Length: 92
Length: 319
Ligand SMILES: [Fe+2]
Ligand SMILES: [Fe+2]
Picture 1: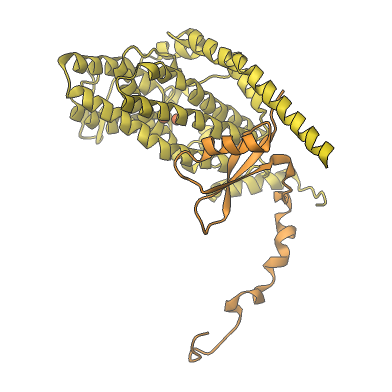
Picture 2: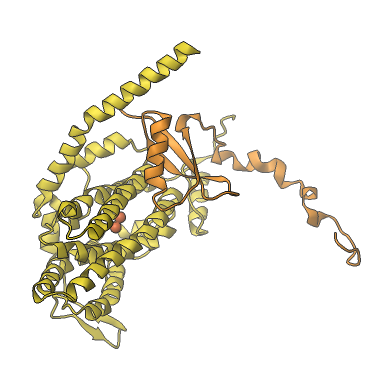
């Protein structure tokens, strides 16, 4: 019998996002949290932990990276450098 | 997401471009079967080594000479368990099955580092293991922080951060013993004599006898050859031995000003082969202990799973 796999995310300190640090096996969410504390935060690496069943994550496929991310590639007007403003306009 | 297939040749070229650009390969990327197999084997062996590596030092936890040394040793051995878990987690991103890896280890189908098949005879061994064995591990592992497979590289970064405490606590322990009695100094020298050559063997067989190195370097899994790393370790360790006041047990060891490196003798590769193939002083004991721990823990795994199943059934019933 094997325990399910959980993905572990740790918030390093207040003000930062949770970041994925690895995975572990545990029978339920509560024990997954405790194991995550022991495995991934032995030296104050975190102030908050999320555990997520590995099977619950939906990911984009790397094969499709070009078409999938294409909508953001051709929209240069989303970036501030797209707009030409004379040098003598202050604070812009 | 719709299935879109890219021809194999294009995928392979993409893989090679990514590796050549020093970018990382990530779990869902296409990769050659050989790359995946090599990584699973190497990372699993590495994980097994961390787990088996708890035993030689664990042997001294109950007999540590002070509460301070006991707390340090406990923390170090617990770190090694953590290292094993980071690495098993990396193998699972490649599709390896964790339980199968455990079975491969306890049934002797996968190897672990030969160094852990030597006994720890005195407390000085704890210090020498930290200094030499963790020291050699660091030499091996620092370049792996830039290995081409992302999850492996990230696990190595965590591990390397923790290893520096391991090596320093060992060296500090030895310095303390060297300031002690004549008997304690003899213990340090004796432990150094026993661990020196096995530590040099940790880098693996000489380059001429290491058939997989070339492919691993082409895939940038490995960044330096065995002999390069061994030389680096010797160069780093000799001045540490001098400062400590111990002699390294190699009559051929001397500075070579032309090469800018220390020359040193040849490890007993016949012994290395014997220990790797199962015939070292402690192989049987290490595996038996690991198997017993796994079997003794079966009821805990089953009870926790049964409890989780009952609680989730109750929650569904209440909803
Ligand atoms: Fe380690
Ligand atoms: Fe270590």
